[in-house]
Structures are given as structure tokens and as C-alpha cells.
View 1: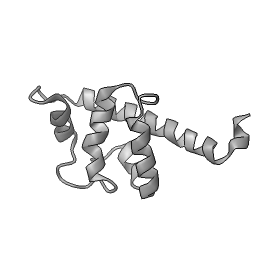
View 2: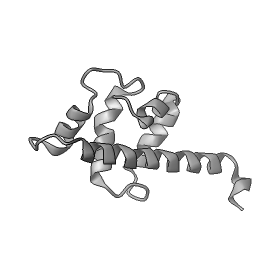
View 3: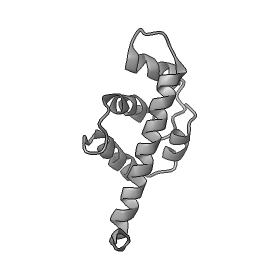
View 4: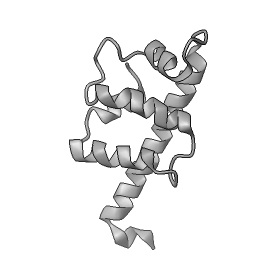
Length: 102
């Protein structure tokens, strides 16, 4: 699957991937169950996301079952997950440099 998110996730370490998974699992950071479901679908394909089964269509099927496929919900969820990733990166930066909190 080609997206801004998967492109970015290809370059992070396995520890960062684990930390991001923890971030997504936390109800304090992610309140949408669909975001968590999308991450649960994507995570097994990490870090390359090149498996032929890693498609928007398969993600839609995993999240919505037999509903007729539409790109819009998956694109919206990927966008939301991207913004959660950006929040995660900002948190990691603050955690690494406590002086920046002030």
C-alpha cells in the first residue's frame, strides 16, 4: 500500500514501531476504534508494506466486512492515522528534549 504514512513508517526502527503501536493502543491518544482496527490490519505488513495483500481494498474489507468498497473511508482513516503518527513524533521529540516543553 502506498501512502504518506506507509512511506514514513518504512524508515523507523522496530523500537519506534513498537512505541507507535503502544501510542495507537492508548485510549488517551486514539479514541476511534476504526483507527486501531486499521493499525491492526497494517502492522503485520510492516515495515515494508509491500505484501500484495496490503491494499486499501483489503483494509476496507477487514474493517467493514461485506460492505461495498469505497476509497473515501479508507483514505480518511489513513489520513487520521497519519495525523496520529505526527502527534506521536511530536511527543517523541518532546520526550527526548524536555527543555523544549517550556
